[in-house]
Image (tube, rainbow, N blue to C red):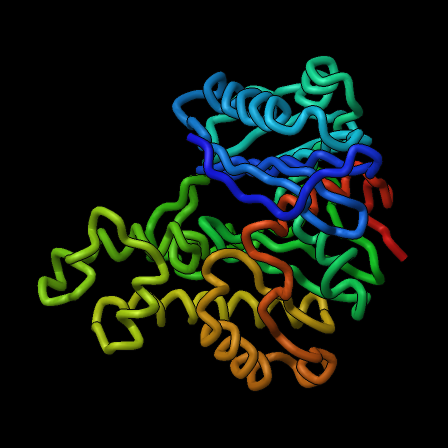
Length: 333
């Protein structure tokens, strides 16, 4: 399935990158200019039945996009943001949990041969953090955290204007910090990971699991199409189950982010992803951090805020930045 979204018209003499944002349920493909303007984009479905079907979904998405706009601007390359564990230097998609990537895929080489363009890969949250470096918080701050609260939870870490990757390009997996040793089992196999409690997917699963214990909850009306937005709306209206789900998610975020602020001493925490649309979550997080983080760290924290980048396109923007360089370490200063 393909949905349409467009911004302006492609000019044949304007150089752009093809950005590809691959998520657990959808793929967004677009032409993006170096100044961060999305010229054309289309959204496609992701088939997670198997590793082969997932890879085929990516091929089909790019193929269809190029069929529509192949006569447009000359792309300098393709940048692809992917969930899971990526080796950018080797161009290998090594593993993913919410998409069944169980065997390493030499995706950059495969795509380069298929489309005749340079191809660069990176993790999707690192891509979003690169977008913040170029077009968002990075224009004002040298030390910040990009916190992605979506279907899952992860964070990008920027220190002195540099993207912190860790030894295996796996730094920032905040969603797998254990915050409740008696909590539900995570897809990673551990018990009580924050992702099971505070991510969009985690909140929905918990709400559905608890519905039988809350027969009067208004959430029972939405079992077949429950979204986090509905949980937040019903919590605001005083629904007991929705309030419990929201408060437990907030508490998990508060505890983990206090540890993050004390450990990494950022100037700002930028919150992105679908869950960030609930502005009160962001406000409550900041108020809590002001009270609980160590004084020096709390005083250095200028603010906690929602990303000013389009939540639906930040991954696409970041994927496109892979084409224009800045180095694999993400340095733009």
